[in-house]
Image (cartoon, rainbow, N blue to C red; front, side, top):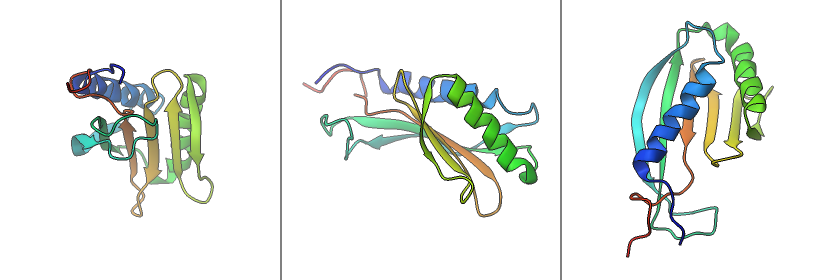
Length: 137
C-alpha cells in the first residue's frame, strides 16, 4: 500500500509522454482530442496491488500528416521510444500498424495505431495510482 503520484500528476505525465513522442514527428503533425483525459478504475491491476486505484489516460488523433506516410511516421515514433528509455511491449508491424511501449522509469504505456480509415491515434496511460497519492484510510 505504497504512495503513488496523484491523478493530477499522472495526467501531467500522460501529456509529457505524448508531447515527447510528438517531437519526433514532422512539424505538420497536430493533436486532436478524441475523448479527453480519462480516469478509470484499476479493476485488474497487473502489479498485484489493490483495486481501489485508478489509471489516467488520454487518447488523441494525430492530424496533419499524409496517411501514405503512416508507416514512416510510426517508425519515427518507434525510434524515439527506443532512444528515450521505452521498452517495446507490442509491435504488430507489418501486419498491423500498432505499437505499444512502456517507459522504463515510470511504467507509463504509450500506443500508436492506425484506424480503418487510415488515421493515426495515440494513447498514453499511467500505471495504477491513488487519486490523491496515498491509500484511502
